[in-house]
Length: 226
Image (cartoon, rainbow, N blue to C red; front, side, top):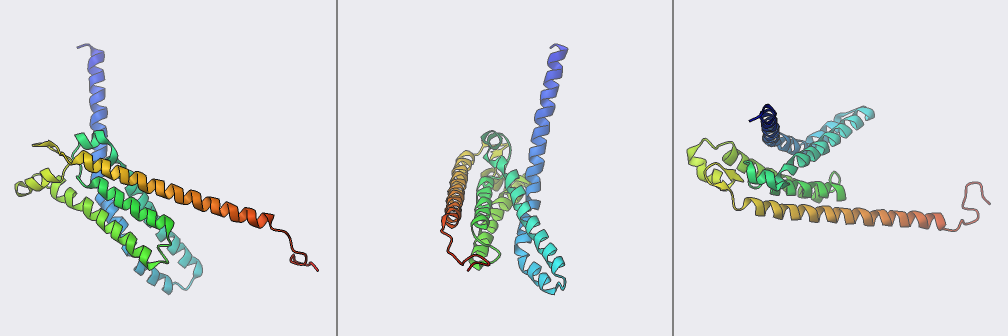
């Protein structure tokens, strides 16, 4: 081989190895984000009790806004990193939790509830969001802990082969790609529903504004009128 070919091969190996290492690191870090998201969501009663003890209104507002920003930001970051599970090449070549795409779908459903309903004021919406988050976290924790991270345990080898996308012994799991495509279809449907809802609400708001602007001015209704 020529020196240029050797340099190209080494560069490609470094790039591919680095990308796989980065993806594996982010996937392994996702449980921390899932745990943080659950803690912030379920810790809402504690935050409200703390707000009642705040004598300074400014301090209470800062505390509440900081909590909301952290809670929702962690959910968005978790969903962004979970997009790895919708890449067919990665699912077919790397060892991922089998139900990782389903966990991302339930996380998107929780965010959809937050975007369309007042979760902090509606108890039913808060409960629905909690159910979606707990189901999503369970679908991620169980295969990651007992299939991916416990590969060295012989008594869990059967579970590892069944709940990982790629296994060193059996290769690609036959259910990996179907679960990914089904979850991707669910994601597309949720995003389409959110888009239609936002579009309808925007048109309704614009129609109300135009109606107010085109309404005739009644004499004497203005300030200082007779």
